[in-house]
Length: 303
Ligand code: ADP
Ligand code: MG
Image 1 (tube, rainbow, N blue to C red):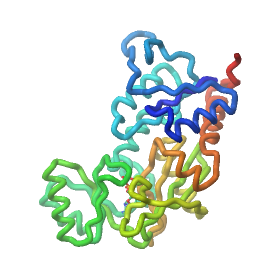
Image 2: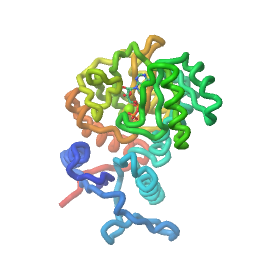
Image 3: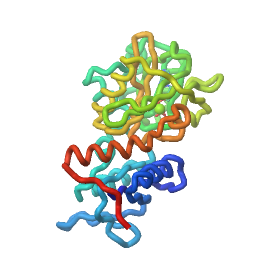
Image 4: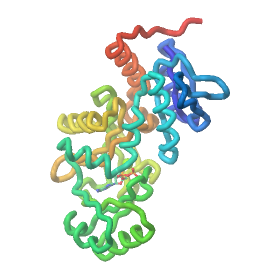
């Protein structure tokens, strides 16, 4: 079997671990910089071309598309899909996961617990959305932020009004969300592979910070999930149609709520905190999917 890891950084922890896990099973791994892939789109033999050669005979791809490259990255993933290659994350699922509004709408329809969240266009409706989330303190989020950038805590109604006005003045689209204060700056990452939570960790925000992102100084430790939290994470991944997903949850006083579902979840924090070989689980998921869905025989690459 031949698997391509679509990644811009061969030295990144997640990329290295995936390559290791592929090779440990005797398969062939190739790291492909998706921004250097170009495409033959309109021919009857659609192809992805890299370093002057068609990328052929791959059994699967593992997309690791950076948030700032979603557009081109998902075009490359889609092109692989056109050639019949199995992608661990489908291009549409990656796109969905990158838009917080679209994701929450889909999760809500599936009956998944979420923080109370509002969205508005006009600054004339600021009062309405603030009331909808039960007033300040509240959280304001840019639709396409990551790593905690673009997530703001407004402690008072006045602060909320001026931050919303400022963002809207810049034409930025934002979500207004109830602040889950009772979680005390911690949230949970549940790593779902093939319909199962294979690893989980708790992230705790640094002193004086409410965002638990590691990029904002958050720390990680292992955590045992309650059965309803596992079930919620699995349902969230399924709703987003992601075979591999990092589901972020918070323990609110109205039960566990999903914050977001990540389609290229990092491996470093989760493997470190949980001690689980998550990369290996992802490769096993590829094996199972190809065998089950396509009746394919997967075997180590010879020679
Ligand atoms: P990003 O995509 O930037 O990671 P998130 O929505 O995951 O955006 O928010 C970043 C962090 O901010 C979360 O991991 C959590 O610690 C904190 N946070 C987000 N939303 C809320 C909320 N409604 N209440 C309390 N904390 C929140
Ligand atoms: Mg997050």
